[in-house]
Image (cartoon, rainbow, N blue to C red; front, side, top):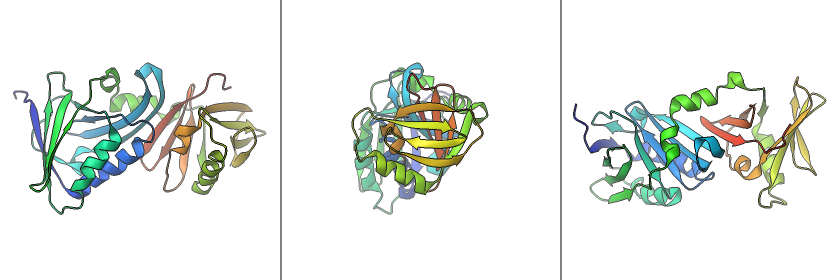
Length: 256
């Protein structure tokens, strides 16, 4: 099959809404997003850093492509759409949701599989969204890499944060919030304690040696779980899993 420079797709307003719900959450990490599309999956992520080796925070969500859109052409290699302004992307596309009309779209891409622009048309509203400049990290990261990096079997220890505890942590965290604040997790006398220098919340028991780790507060309190959060500590980073999201935050230097 000859590689085309555009791909046709169709989606419903409800399917678009599902994507925009994730976009609204992901832009809490960074306003720039990357969307990778193939015939099987749609990977969407936000990150803080310049490369995969220099990431401070990374958050992603994975859709099954067929759950989000009908792709009318074969995608030979993953298409990479860099969204330079995720909040603007959200505000533009949410205008399609109130119409009870399916949306037809076209993805126009270059020879490197970066998306130049995407058109959305429901016969009432038509818009074109331009892709951002290519960035190295968008080609570096794929679903297999994410699954390997975030394999919970490789974590050092894990614990669970109940929703009621997370809400208390978030509320306490914003009382004296200043830029570059950190959250501490202390393992002390077989207890998991999370908080700051002046306060902490006891999350429960754990069988592990005493230790302390810390990481930036802003990324942590950006979460909005419907229920509990599963937390996994690795060598160098902590992973939070909730509502099918993955949020990875690099640990502060000196955590031990």
